[in-house]
Length: 40
Image (tube, rainbow, N blue to C red; front, side):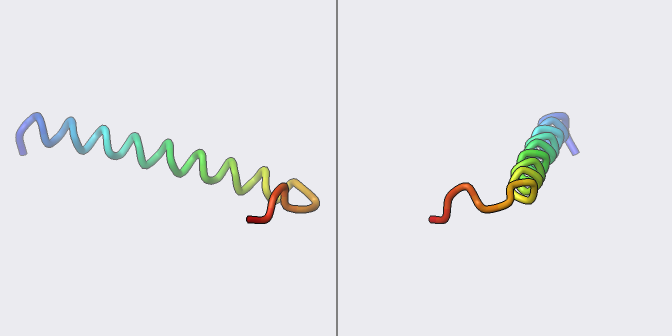
């Protein structure tokens, strides 16, 4: 493994963690509401 692939892996991991965090926040907000904000 070279340095570039390691950096790439770290960036992807951080992005995935941020994504998961944002999704879980949205789910929590959705659950806290008595009714969905908007139905598409």
